[in-house]
Image (cartoon, rainbow, N blue to C red; front, side, top):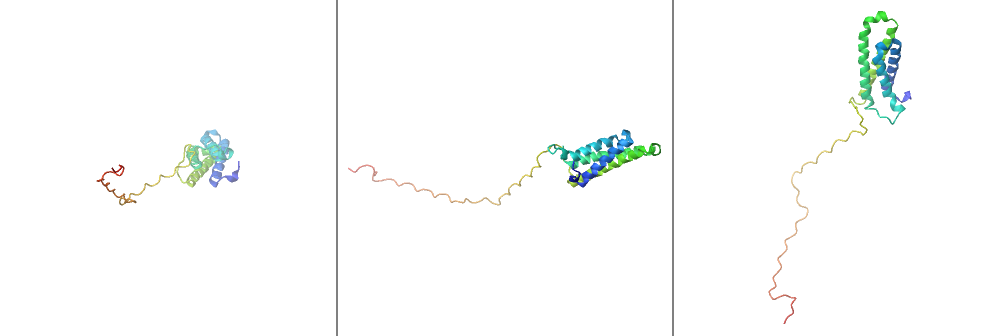
Length: 172
């Protein structure tokens, strides 16, 4: 695992995933279950190409990161809204939940940034070949038919009739 080979979006996503995992473990699984799951998926998406270069992801890295990061971000917002009433009761465990929520939001932002860096188009599936080139334009219609390049042969003259007999017969 070479952290220096990662782009800034991949670094942010992996840091967010680690924060979400640590926060989920400190705060307990109850509030960070989705955060833990999405964090593990994000780490797999980011580091699998380094660990196994022959393995192909089922889509582009940006498309997968935006899906997983979006799920993490939405889950983080819902967890924040769900746990706000219990702020005073939870005490120190709430900081673990906040860390998990912050990690989920970081993964969401990093996934969106990576997706936009790839052009903002979803590329999911196992396409192994690059997209085909667009078809060539059809030839333009000709303005007028072309004249023949070679003149047709001149008609042959009729053979002349032999009036005095043929040359093949001997004279008598």
